[in-house]
Length: 280
Image (tube, rainbow, N blue to C red):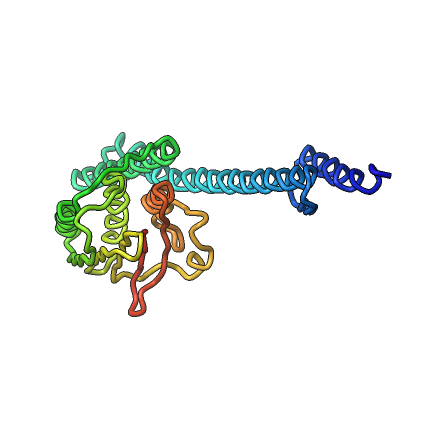
């Protein structure tokens, strides 16, 4: 009678739960709320199931992002390789018969060198993404005055390189903040470089504190992000810089590093046109 009244139900729930978990089925709930030892055991089992389910979702998300990244890197590598092969075939056909003017030959070599450099950049970026998971954060007290001054100097140099304008506004009130300064600077370098590459003439950066977070808004006056990409969200990033609706590896690196830092990254378009990247 005691087994029937007190033990059969929770033992049956626990037995069924363990069977589901052993079959890798975590899409269920354990509900048994009596205030005794078996109720506490069922509560602990539910907590374990919930944590296993969350970990499984994270693993699947990581695998999907890795699959998309590998496919996109392969896609991007194909383009410069095709360019190099095309120019090599052209040279093989025309060099033996000396049918290439010197100017055309120099131009062809320059194009091949550019494609090779682009290929090298893709390989380095892909390697950096693979190493992101091994990066350790080193939190320290960062002088905000010195940090923002260096950031403004870096943005000004990028503006000169791309022959565009850079405007920076600082709304942070704290003199010292605790963060990984090098990682944060690397994230912003990626975002600013991406902004300058797609801007028509201007890139702006806003730095301000909102509650416990430090926010960075990077804006440009280019064409903005594709609507389909914004609908997809920031769960998957593709490294193609040429194809419409795709993002560069710099954005992927920034997203991953910001999440490791306890923040996040979101995308949008400015009301008047142009892209907006919000980092916290």
